[in-house]
Image (cartoon, rainbow, N blue to C red; front, side, top):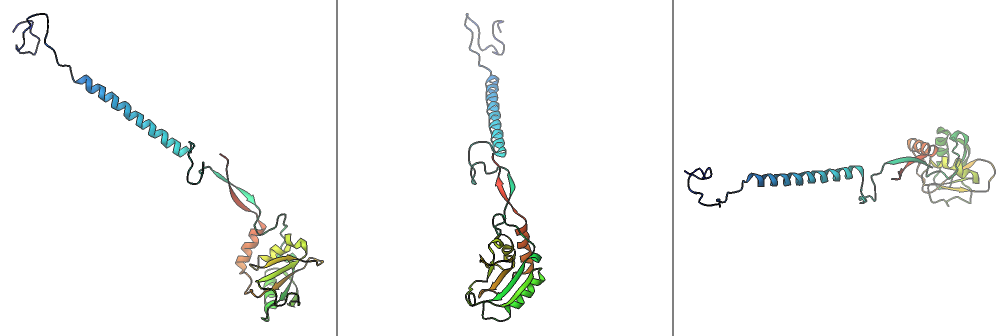
Length: 214
């Protein structure tokens, strides 16, 4: 084999002039380029996915959720007045309220029975008996609560915790006493547990959730 024959040719090719046989390019360089491109693409996808996760958990972006724009903002509670009390109401204790109980139905014994139960719950009891002609057989609901105008913000809301559905109405009387006129829809006073819960809610303002500004 001639010294001018390239190694690995095994004597198949022989150099006869100034032109050499064309050599095959190595495949390693091509594989390296493909590997670099694939790695860069994978890193790009990972970075994009990370940004999306950060955006989801931090609430970023301008897209609105099903509950509205930035619905996942933290909320805080602020006090709001009880729905049962009038604005500026001053809730007083039952032992400071004198209640007159009158029966406007055709059923006998309701006035005394109701008065006795109210007394057990701490109310003071005044007159007990049948309703006057102005209201007798004319109260269709559970009851009618009457008192001076000031009682709409003091004693009447407290008395209303004992009887659901009773109408509260001011009249021109003098003094602080209030009336409970039993109507045709009356069955019984609220249970003591229900009345106590309503009275507690009346005494303490509720806390309504308000969205925090984002």
